[in-house]
Image (cartoon, rainbow, N blue to C red; front, side):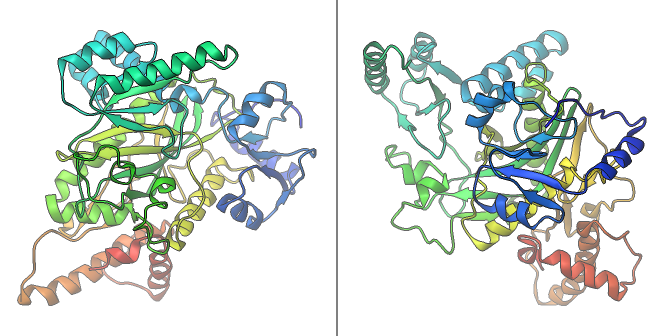
Length: 479
């Protein structure tokens, strides 16, 4: 491995790419996680797995390796690694909130309160124990509400608890202080105390959150891609505020839910994002769903902008973030956290297919093979949503929302979505014919391989549309 950087300017881009392509007959890769990722890497043409001490071109590493070795690793110009050096500015819960609060203050100062209000998508949060006294003051202003305590670096639901009594926090604080006094070399673990969203949107009486994937290739300039597929994670137990100690009610993490006595390994606790959108559209109409997903787009952009000036934007680095979003009864999205190492382990065949496609498309965007021109707005399942500024939709895309049976999102998923009308007997045959026509049109766009036809559907297009149907969750969208 050598050192260097990659020029991302369009000028001379094609020439440098051609030169890189000639030099790289194969891609040497390493990957620490042993899961879906290894299946994808080992099946990729021209990619060769190397052992620990061998040189590599691409390394999907653990965060712990990054912390211990990044500053001492000598990298060639073309090499890529799967995390930014100080990714924790976005992925540690306390730092994420600190940076968002700073951005909100900056926007209020420079653009006014209306613009600053676009950052009001995270619950009131205090870092503990540092902001304990501020928390107590806020707690006493609103007695009886529910709060949630989370370790700032925790994952999979570990260390999380809900509370309504100040005594619970005081006991926690005493225990933490005691540990700190006894073990000076092991500082107290930091937590955040966050106002609990007491009115989550429920489906079947159960709480859920959304996992959405964002791929960042650069922070300066900010270049971010949004994946069109994702999923909703459900709890197995009906939601109630009367039992705040029951993790199976309040935490949607698969690591928690799979321990529930009612958990079904084959069924899992997930819906694909398309199915979720279809359900919401049937209940609230397409416009409400479009507003929700547009608000989610705002969350992704604002959160990345909040750390843009503090993340070390090394050109060897990229990062696939897993955003966790909770939707409340008013269809307002709330940012819960951002994961630097979202789980790539599949919990079902459908989940495996989604994550395999996600990883394949991530590698397409990272482009170790130097195949891209640098001007693409769509690569695989990813849409370029920010390229040092907002990215407009591709020209020629059909806005199927006007057709009456389809809804499109600004970035998340081209989706076949039937209107919420309840058809009577006379409407069924007409809707079936119109639905099939529009379905084929949507799949033509979805397949990303064929320009939209007029009203005729050649056999080749139908074949490609059929192939597109095999993507996660699409069959659930059939009329």
